Amino acid sequence: MGRLLAAPFLSLALISSPVPALAGQLVVTLAATGEELARMPVDEGARWSVLWHHSVDGYEVEDIYENAGGTMLLKRSHLPDFGAGLGHIPGRGRQISDGEGGYWIEDIDEPVPGNAYILRPGRAAVNHRLRTEGDEVSLTALAEHQRVRIALEPDAQEPTTAP
Image 1 (cartoon, one colour):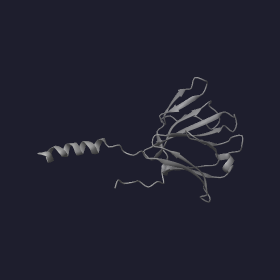
Image 2: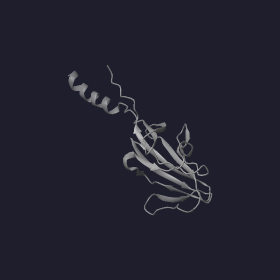
Image 3: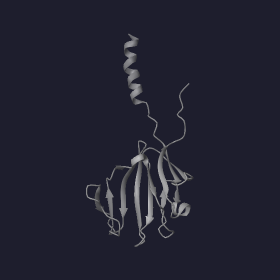
Image 4: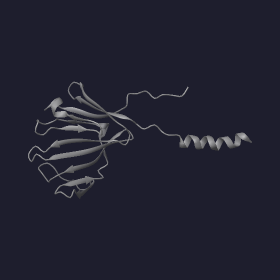
């Protein structure tokens, strides 16, 4: 009789066991050589931003990404104005006012193909930056006018097993 009762409890224990979060690393490398320039931790559900100053008008633009189960997902963008090269693409998220003359594009929820993309950081006045909850790195200071690859990679730590 003890065996019949054990099976449901074992199943319940397996279902309710905590699943480890998919930790990741944002890795910035030079596209031409693969040389690593920066590495920043981003846990499952964590968000980070790529920020820069608009090259003509000088205001700050921000794209916000999330580690969604190990996938780099573009979540939202903030655009303080309808400047050159900026705007909302109908069908790609929804545009709402930021209350200060600019706007947010919310609910983009677009996976980045291959969990990586290439960016060419602009001059010092543009100052492309990568910001996580605990850190900020100037991509312009590291590689002005060079192609860099920004990638979400799985955490390098090996999973541990119970003895």
